[in-house]
Image 1 (cartoon, protein in one colour):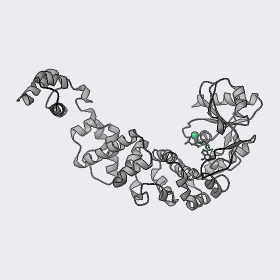
Image 2 (cartoon, protein in one colour):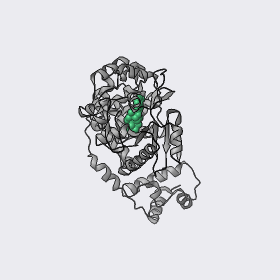
Image 3 (cartoon, protein in one colour):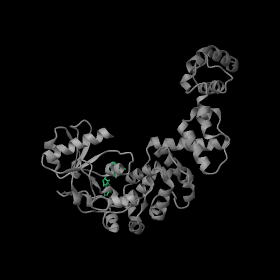
Image 4 (spheres, helix red, strand yellow):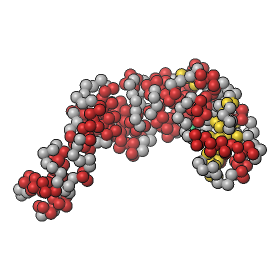
Length: 391
Ligand code: ATP
Ligand code: MG
């Protein structure tokens, strides 16, 4: 990350040499102050996109209509965005039009929360017009300006507040929270993909339960599928290893409406499959996992299903650590590792391909997995001919 900051410093210096202002802004500044892991570093500038493109030789127009140019000259891509204020808002969504301005203060004013409206110079001096540092010290999420107005402009900000609550463990400042409660219904104007993107971040946060509590207390949950209020207590101990696991748990708590949840939140096919695998593993766990369950199910899926059961207070006969050990002790890791395949079976028996093949493969697999048959071609052949070649 130090390298990234150096690269961004160089970008800022070059913009300054051309006679414009440039500073670090946004999430990376916030996370640097908080000593949290920093992601993409954003630079804001008084230069117009066209001016940025004359300063650097390698640029990509990633969001030029919003003033963002990606600068590639310094070795890693850095997003450079022209100071702007937002144009008019329709439908409680982010505006389509933006107005470029030359003042950093005006740019920071349109940002959502005070902690996200702090800028930093290339020498890491803080520029804080809206009390972001004080709010960070008090661990508060506070809207910049009048909360009500800011949430009317863009309803997604309400869900961002809840997401930051979950990620940072900060409280949402009272007036800001009251405004969310009043305007929660506007979240319905926001595209489901953007809502899912925020929930993804809640799932992998350190404070999932606090996030869900805020979602409920802010009334936002009233407009989001998933019966968060009814299931509130079920979220108490949740800690997810991936966003998909969060979706799996949401579906688990709403099994009758599982299909409609998957659809409402626009989950990808990959996520859908994952959810289904976790639910299947959960059901199997209630009977006790068989050796085939251990064999056929990904470790993360087993561990997730195990967590779900623990959070329901279900007593389990294995410990969580044992799952990986059992899986690792299996004689083979995948069906491909079997030292015989369907072609061998057909050759040995002179029988044509048919449903019997899968049956035979399953039996051999089970015998190898439970240790009654060695995974070696000759032994499999002998065992197979004895078991199957009776007609
Ligand atoms: P993350 O760590 O998830 O990337 P972030 O704060 O960087 O969090 P981004 O969505 O990357 O969030 O946005 C970068 C910056 O742009 C924010 O820090 C904030 O200043 C501003 N911003 C983003 N979304 C909004 C919004 N809906 N309304 C106002 N300002 C916003
Ligand atoms: Mg960001």
